[in-house]
Image 1 (spheres, helix red, strand yellow):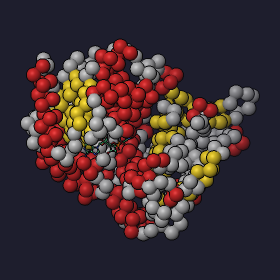
Image 2: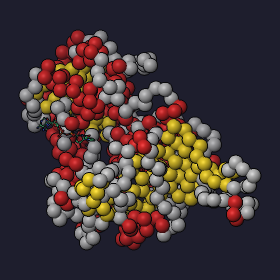
Image 3: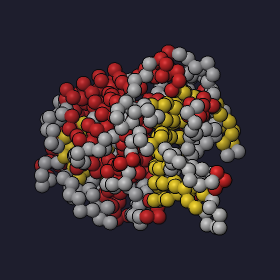
Image 4: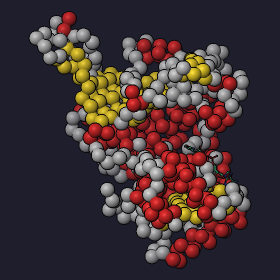
Amino acid sequence: MKSNIKTKPTIYMIFGGTGDLAERKLIPALYNLFLEGYMPKEFAIIGLGRTDYTNESFIKNLLGGVNKFSRSGKADKDQWADFSSRISYLRTDVNNEGDYAKMEQVIDKYEAEWSEPPVIIHYLAVAPNFFPIIASNLAKMKSAGDAERTRVVIEKPFGRDLETAKELNALLRNIFDEKQIYRIDHYLGKETVQNMMAFRFANALFEPIWNRNFIEHVQISVTEDIGVEDRGGYYDGSGALRDMLQNHILQVLCLVAMEPPVNFDAEEVRNRKVDVLRAMRKFGPEEIRFNTVRGQYGEGWVKGEKVEGYRQEQGVNKESNTETFAAIKFFIDNWRWQNVPFYVRTGKRMHQKSSIISIQFKDVPHLIFPNNSSESWQQNRLIISIQPEMSIRLQVQAKRPGLDMTLNPVDMVFNYDGTYETDTPEAYETLLLDAMKGDQTLFMRGDQVETAWDLIMPVLESWEVKKSINFPNYSADSWGPEAAEALIAKDGFHWFTLPIKKSDKK
Ligand code: NAD
């Protein structure tokens, strides 16, 4: 379906245009936006990188990426020809001040040719150590101060702790207005995650029971079946807490727990999310001891093949203390959520790749049915599955057909695949379009990032200072360390998993 959203003439300057992210995600996303009519009539994509490419060789490489990674399959010849005629390559070194003058010339050229001054989006798809130097050099460009037209998209990770996040924020705010800064967390662009807002605030049904009186506990589980693959060097300096929990998981948690915003305005929505982070209970030594679990995967077998342990992976320190698994029990100290535990976990080399939010409701106050009427009693549960399946399930008890009153749980399922004919857009499509439109709702504001770091810092510091004596403590293809099961089992619950469908198996 073609869009009728009007976007202004736009220049996407992609720093790291020759990198993995650009090839796998950014260019396929822009191409799909183009196919669906979301790109403005006048747009240009300038790939920036140090490699010696011509326009032609650069575009040829990108076509390879689109053919391999685009959700719309192999590129259509004519459409690609049209799209790629707007792409060019500029060889640049981000450290070289003179190269920014070259970028400015390109911008000036389009500005002179086009019907109106373009929106300029500097997309920083480079290693985070380059963010400060790029921002400082962009500051010298005449377009930098134009808060209406110039935007800068910052990839993750945003800092590696509270202090570095604050430093980066201070540097960026010195150059740009907050409304020019787009801190990306691609999780927020995912359809099911966005649907949390619609689900909660466009239905009268859930909001009255969305609180401590009806909800017993909440789980957010983001597990991967792969190991660190070729990112060992990077990951060993990061770990599960930084890579997944501080950003993606806490952002999802905010969507589950936030108060209803007054409207859908970016500032309003982001204010309500920060409120959640600010209300989350801080960690003292006792909370760290009883409410957190870390893990590191050892070797094991995955689908009949032997796989290495984390410490044997390329680029990883042989005595690494980095966690590849983290589970935390959080509390939110406000009226809505007092004493409702929020269990979150994330890990690599787990039994299943999945991202699930599970909201378990309290049990019925009194059971009127005979004891033997239920085969498998299950309290009501709402399960929002982000991947591999995109679905929302409500688990309810029902009578099994037959002459006896036998109860068992059944799922009421809203599955994206079966409900909508249109393909769901990739997260990056949503976010790249929002950046063009100037909509920051799905991007993280500076104080949001800092508050999330602030919350997690005591855990991070404690884990760094106290070396784990039992790493590796879970084997590949498992559900993580035993202690993570105990963390939730001691409260009488268990981690929820969706059964693996045949189509999900690799
Ligand atoms: P990459 O190593 O594949 O690419 C890095 C890019 O930086 C290359 O284009 C390279 O030419 C460019 N570069 C390096 N030094 C340069 C210099 N001095 N001057 C100019 N350009 C220079 O990295 P990537 O995987 O594409 O990741 C880029 C950023 O995106 C990182 O911050 C990463 O954390 C983030 N990110 C990546 C992914 C992903 O799937 N790859 C996902 C989420 C976030």
